[in-house]
Image 1 (cartoon, rainbow, N blue to C red):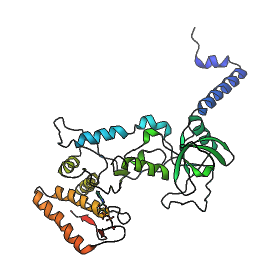
Image 2: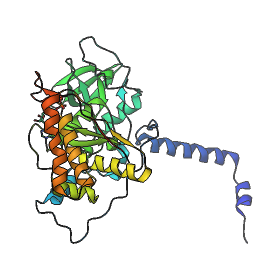
Image 3: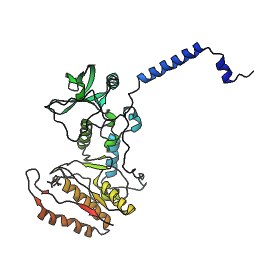
Image 4: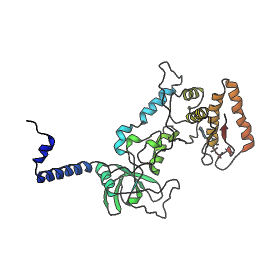
Length: 331
Ligand SMILES: Nc1ncnc2c1ncn2[C@@H]1O[C@H](COP(=O)(O)OP(=O)(O)OP(=O)(O)O)[C@@H](O)[C@H]1O
């Protein structure tokens, strides 16, 4: 005899059905307890999709071991998005934001959205770290031990336990995200996390990072062996996509050729941050792109000396301060 599914359900009493649905609700509640609170949605990116990455040809070799270096550094710090997906949540702080008079507020960071108690419970349970704003504006790593109302007891990495307002705490990223080459990859995009990520990279002489389509360059104040013909050729052939001025100029150049639309490269930063040097590096790449004859490329670059002779001056922050750099190239 064959019973259809519908005839089976008729034999169940309504009490059984009610018990069954209660049991299912209980199970769902249990599952939810261990999950992190839902992520607030991020705004859709307006950036162009990155180019497909070409793989290295088998016979490719660079004498100074650049590729080896880059690849080993990438492996050292590269983040695996799948491993980190459980942490992928957007910028947030715990509790209402209170502005203290003696706290230095960064003008670059938007108001931090409020987070509910569930997230704090999750952080305590999973022993995740938080950044704690100190009275003079600096940030310290710590982990929340307990909360009471708007106050939290936080154990700092130096062993001290402090009572702090919840609004002075923001989530820190897990170690696995440390040193991501694009800030888009880090889960918590708050001020201390961004600064920490850039410092982490800078300490490893990785002065370039990306923030989506924007390149962040930190002044190394020393000569790094990351420029020159080998590097130009590597970026020209698109063998690597690590953040670099060459990579950014290459993208602008290719976009200009593909779309037949003029491109502008805007270099901004405070005096002495390295705008002029960055512009020269960009020019170096453009000269190499536009000239098969390295003599002519050098002639173009030599014009910098003349420009600097007329346009530069010594200031209190920069011995070779200039204010006239702009690059534009037209099809
Ligand atoms: N990529 C770099 N590699 C090595 N040194 C650098 C680099 N960028 C900057 N510097 C160092 O920092 C100094 C100041 O840089 P630069 O003159 O480019 O700053 P700037 O932002 O153009 O300043 P200003 O606005 O005053 O003209 C340079 O003279 C150089 O010593």
